[in-house]
Length: 225
Image (cartoon, rainbow, N blue to C red):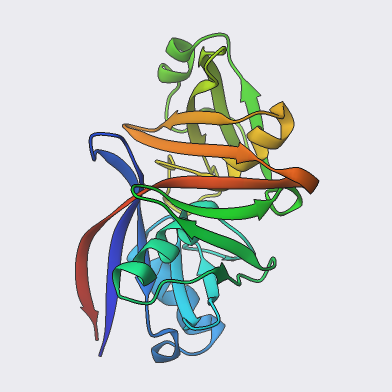
């Protein structure tokens, strides 16, 4: 038996929203890629994380159908959870590479590189209302990140994320990698309001690095049989 922690990542200012994430703190309890992929599919979260070495920050990320080298909301959520469990980290090590971690009073931050955030297509719409009116998912193929300025001067963006990969996730409530990609393309800090009530905060840094921050809340702890 091992614990599965379920957290909500990128919660809004009032505590709403947030993308559910499953974290298996003892990754060794689910050895092997096939077993992990099966469990991630059964859980049905947009991503599930297996912590292989908390001290070194080594983690493994799976969607219901595939393994990811990098994803934003799983890494922010895992960093927060390790601190919540009394094991704060300075770095996380997903397959893509080492990521610096920092904590402030309210937000947990990770620093990812723009070249890691691939496979998503940001598409600008004319207004936030147009983004809100999109069906879930919109027609078409491939990962769509629909966005519009809600306040361009303030860097505030309205966004929705549609994986369109046939794994049962019609809409992603909060997508850190897509926000990171958009931040790099626009070259400025963003305050992204995604999904039903989530908030993602970004800050560009030198050399293609982007700081990605958000609030995290614990939803439940389950036991895996």
